[in-house]
Amino acid sequence: MVYNARADMKPDLKGMTREEIADLLVGMGEPSYRGGQIAAWLYDRGAVSFEEMTNLPRGLRGRLDGEARIGNLELAAEAATAALDARKYLFRLEDGETIETVLLRLATSRTVCLSSQVGCPVGCPFCATGMIGLRRNLSTGEIVDQFLRVRARLDEGEQPTNVVFMGMGEPLLNFENVLRTVRILTSREGPSMSPRRITISTCGIVPGIRRLVKERCTTELAVSIAAADERKRAELFPLAREHPLKKVVAAARDYARWTRRPVTFEYVLFRGINDSRRDAETLGRLVEGVPCKVNIIRYNTARPFRFEASGPRREEEFREWIRPHCAAVTLRRSKGSEIGAACGQLRAGYAGAEPPARAEREGK
Ligand code: SF4
Image (cartoon, rainbow, N blue to C red):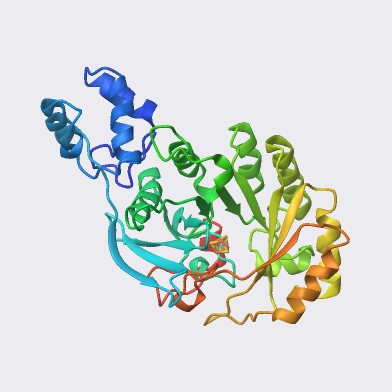
């Protein structure tokens, strides 16, 4: 099992579950309850060094320092919107790569939007992260630490209320580390979040959705449907052929049955591409009968992309066209576009990135 971004390092305890830390401690001749103590220091109290773990014997702290480590992200920059409703953090990883994490502040919620990969292998032609290509998967520790670092910077009395895997990367293509992060965030030694407060957002990786059921995951699931017509979808989503819509929707329906909660279908509106009445009706028929919500999202126009947002009037019309098929339709404008923190805008300092070639995307 790989816990570390770099194999030459001592094992990083941040990113291990309580059971995994306990196994390591038992291997060092210590009682297994130390696993719970250390997990609580890491995930509840946000300790960044063994020295802080004052309920461990001094000698053990010294041994841990020699045999293990606690990985910590370096905050390289941060930016906030004028209204302070969105804040973006640029973190530098131990190998020099960078990622972005976003905090969304609404009246009653604090949502942390986590990255799961450095870049993304999918390469959607409207997405800044996709232009980078995949540089590597994040380790569990690097994903969890985004949450911990953002939490530590909240005002006194504030706590994250929600977590969404909607940052850089396709979470279901880094399945193990995303799922282990969910297990840590929902653990009693950690933030004890309800799985219902965590959303995994995917562009429609069918085996990944199916595996969530097998692994008994009960988080919320959001599935992005670039277009309900396969020909148009293939222009917007490079993996459309491998993951046909019928299979995507069937997997999402089975996930909704398993959790007994609706899934969310996300649909970004692009002017003149997927925003006609016919597109809406095709989408409506596709999701009819599935326990779901449809979330229509305004595209955040950004250079150098050729896509444009449809505009408020068309967004309203599109919503009304879907309604006969699915009652739960919402319009969402993602926050943070003024600081490049909205959906599809994260690029973490790879400003000159070009879209990866098709062969590279497909791992050839
Ligand atoms: S939209 Fe999502 S899946 Fe597509 S390239 Fe961007 S991060 Fe990857």
